Length: 301
Image (cartoon, rainbow, N blue to C red; front, side, top):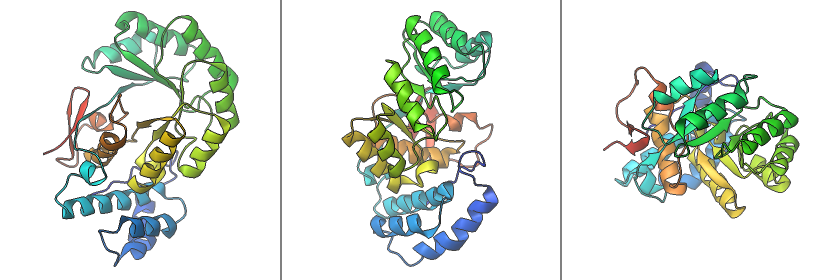
């Protein structure tokens, strides 16, 4: 089976070396000898094998789900309850001046949804407004602040976009991850949907967000949740609470994107996901997994 650990000191606190140590040490010890057709058993074993190390846990969890699917001759998406269907992804535009953003948007004409990174300063509001004017109403625009604002700054920016008629799909993680109270304050003060990313790693985090009314939707990433096992549970809990779900990614190859796309095809097939990382690679270290056709992410034959 195949799995991938997307490492980041700033996000998961992991490195390739730490992942190797966790995977080859306590995680391997925990799953060795377990039946591949018993996801409940190895899911619990992985979850309790090591503290933190979400990307390392995700790599093994996804690899075992992939192995179990292969043992039944089913695509991963079908094995976890869905169907092997393509999903749509947005395209991320990095922080920049209004001119920079427009140039980058025009480099991706096949994408119906663009996610704009903001939080870089004075050009944030103007840049998004400029994109809407130039691209027209047909393109879906999202904004991701990556924890860059205070609650007050977020409300000010979002209200300006609302007043100018930008019509954002959502604003993602406007405040620091730990500031769930601030996230709730932003949501209460604006009409634009608020999506939680770094504030929600697992069901414990999600329960707090639900309890505080802090978000309209969440971004589920395998490298945060620790794999498909916890991600499925998070999606079910979000649906029960009436929250939307977007499946996102970190800087993963087609291995990690394939697992995320299978999850999205199964549980969140409508709307654009955030699975563009495979397009940022100058050279993929693997073949297969998924294929990109414009904004469609298709499972490889």
